[in-house]
Length: 209
Image 1 (cartoon, rainbow, N blue to C red):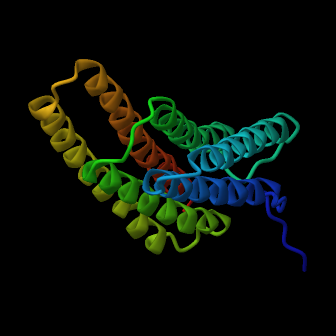
Image 2: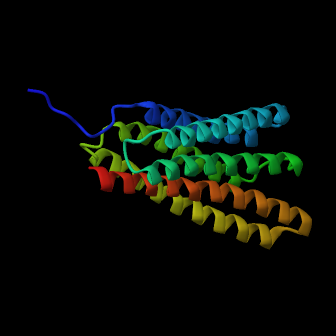
């Protein structure tokens, strides 16, 4: 007796998600390195720029595959949204990295270091979560890990608020304060976008488990 499944066995989307997750984690970690090194920032920025280009390539491959595929592992809208949100985080980190270098900021504040650590942890967790999408029959472990992203986003919000308060309380240079605020905002937005990824994955779990 033969059994048939309507669930596509094509693993291309999952492979693309895994590659996007690798780039996501690598980009966040590279940002942390960029902030902490005193020299060779241009080389590190070039590395982050390459990762951003790799992320764009994965985005385009995924959307192209989606256009040419009739049966998909889960809702087409969720596939598109997930890969776009991953790319959003990479783009925000790339933008923060460029601003940090262009503005010739001599060294990061402790608040920016804390935020980069939060970002790296969030991206690492997401990287560990994405392979779970291959099998949603037992989603409990995935749900628990996704909750960690929400907790990290709250830490990021608190850090951002404290950093901006300190910036405006202590800064005597309005132009420099504007530069710092932009870097803080871009880093905090990257953390927020990590929660967006977690929300998309939670919706996928809800629909498919």
